[in-house]
Length: 250
Length: 273
Image 1 (cartoon, rainbow over the protein chains, first blue to last red):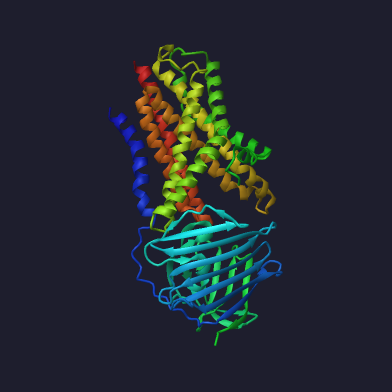
Image 2 (image 1 turned 90 degrees about the vertical axis):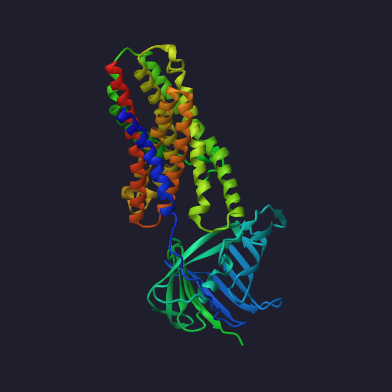
């Protein structure tokens, strides 16, 4: 009888063990202090990075960024253009000046050998993102995404956010990111290592290496103002982008 | 990998993956039979032995045949719908929370499919009616063998789908056989897991439908949480891979050990009476 009970208990323990371990493993971390973001750029700033294959050294394309004042409010419009084999994309993210919270994303991309044209508009309001999208001019069904509590950013503004973080050796943060292109959201953890000297076509910079944990991506942000994005590697280092031109604006 | 159509899933399977998988499954099933063999030795058989193997073959085949449509037509659309729901309704970007309902759905689809496959094998095995005769513990053992065969069939085709592409790229890579080892070990554990859960549900079902449903519910949860934790632990790097594989192996071996202990206890009870 005792053995029988123990047998049933065995099965129960497996289930309960899994249930109890769940919150422990799923991220019951102590609360981090609130994140303070300081935009380091001026309106009119322009950056160009050359994107290349790190193995062959062959140039793949370009990655441009630009910052402008939002004509409708006090914030900024953060723009990106990427021209790579198989994808030419342009995005404008309108953000608030205080905490870089996005209010609007406008995206246009020509993707794949068939040069499929995607146009996307994402409005951040009322605790959710409402996305409208077209593929070659045809409307696509896109679900809404509920916004997470606390700070959140659009994926298309992510490298700008890295520049506004209070980076220092040992700094860590977990950022809520909305990937509007996929109507998903995720958390990206960043960890900063010791400052490194990085030489790129635009010059030699002392940089904070910022690792995007688990994504195989790393950004090198200049230690000095205006904290330019000096170098960026993705695909676990397979693709590397290097700053070739920087204009701080008027 | 194409999981959105049965043909796409089957299209992943190559000869190398199929042969490797059949080998792994044969080893797992043989070990299971060996561990529960004492149950064979006592009392008159409820039906000729060939009917047991026929039943096992039917349930193995049914599970293998049902795997692609169950995944492509039920699990993937269900998980996709749940994913959209979590994105639209949960105010968090924490993947550990967002993926929970999505991952739990895997058990919700796969465990009932394995039970259905096991039930398909029960009839040809001559175990459909309790009045078919033979000592109760032997009937139970045979039913569990048929159920375990369904689990093995499910695990086998899943392993073939997962291992075939890895086999193609893995051996071509400089790591050779060594590069394949983590995937093979993981699938070995997964086959044990599928066999154990299907065997446990069939064990409970053979005693009463009510117990069977309770066991099914419990093992749906266990299955979902196993996948969930495997995803939570999974990170790049050898340490995380080892942790994930150890975790899956531990749960799988615990479940199969529990099933073996239940069968041995029934065999002892049968011998005593």
